Image (cartoon, rainbow, N blue to C red; front, top):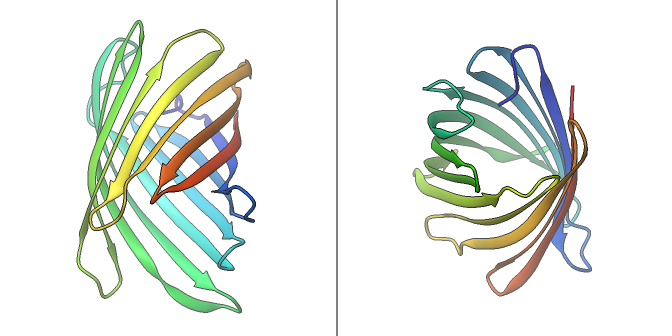
Length: 186
């Protein structure tokens, strides 16, 4: 989470090799201590869908450089297909845990998401980030109940304060998934 009065924007591409994939833009801002407000705009170039979302994330405990923190988030994402056709909305709720040590950071989350007219489905995620100067390697796994999990690895490079490049490669349902993005602090 950013300091009060600061924010960041992340822009990335995600998809399978040789496919158009999805382009995302996600700005976030911290207006008060422990609260981050974010938005999402994405265009799925494979299925010609547009995603628009809002999220609030709050810390339950003060942010710590060393030690553990807990938080939660709530969000709503709306999906449109083609010429304004409404393809549905998804509500998401998450519990978030983060523990930092000199060697790196462990993150875990448990949550639930619900599409309009459907039941709530459990979600989960875990990641490990290793500290190593300007380059931070990471491992991630995440999924939704009744769906195949995604496993991925990558690295984040902070080439200047508040400016970073992130690349991952992963597997889901026997397919290779790639992503490449940039994050800029403001």
